[in-house]
Length: 403
Image 1 (tube, rainbow, N blue to C red):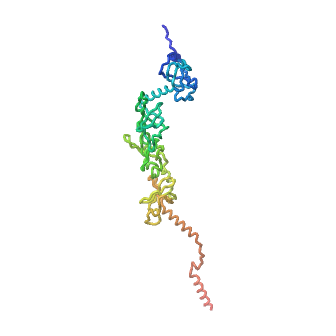
Image 2: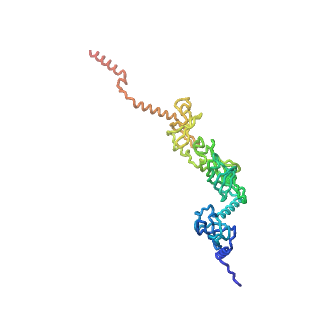
Image 3: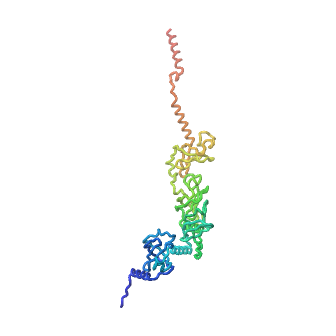
């Protein structure tokens, strides 16, 4: 029985390449060649065993022959299988410009059929819209451009934007694009991705999109979450702008969400140290602290302490006087000194007293005053006022008896 022999794979590849090299080149064929020489009138290309090729300067693309590098591999388009020009006789006439054009149209066709979203650079602004670079020119009507507040179409020139190809006509060399559809679809894609990884306790990165009096809306990737002002810190925040700015990137914790709804609640607190945990050590009972008055309410005064938490001075602890109004004692923004007399970590409450500080100050001033007074000279007569009179009467009676 005759044995069959199998040709090694590398030999098979060599044979296939040799077979291809024997095939004549055809007009319209796109080949891969190697730059072997750069001349003033064009570039010589090695296209394998087929033949040598030549790219005229006008067919390089933009006439930028200085971009050609010897040894560089490029794609070329066959204009004519054989040149009749005297200086290039026998060479295959090639075009890099046309190869680039064909490759660009192929990419455009694929992107259109697949519904891809592309990143492209804006080349120019013309009447009615923008021209973008797709390898060939694409047009984005002004109605299909998402224009930020305060911008004009001119501001997009030289910038990269996202587009989706919505219509092509190769015969007319027309490529119609939309920036608006691209952004909408991209946002919906990112929204679905974000919702898929959402759970309570998740730590996500987002961008502050808008600030309101009650909080900030944070873009988590196609979907917004609300960072309420009460969740921006362990201490009181008067306005969200004190903590965040529009366009700022930050990490947030998810503290609640509706899987089938749009509501997502966010917080910064889990990512920040809680100052109430160390409040008993920071403000031991009996210690004196300085703080700034932040609010005056019917039952007393709120004071911001050095670690950011707020203590409360009840009305009856504001002054040693009775029946006085808080507004007559302190003003918002005023720095005061108070004494800590109660700390309740669980209730997140610290009670302070200005009255006790005032009383201690009065006692200290009285003691210092008494210590500064001169000590009086005390005699027996000051202690026993009648001592001198009794002695004199006793001496008179004694003399009478002697007489």
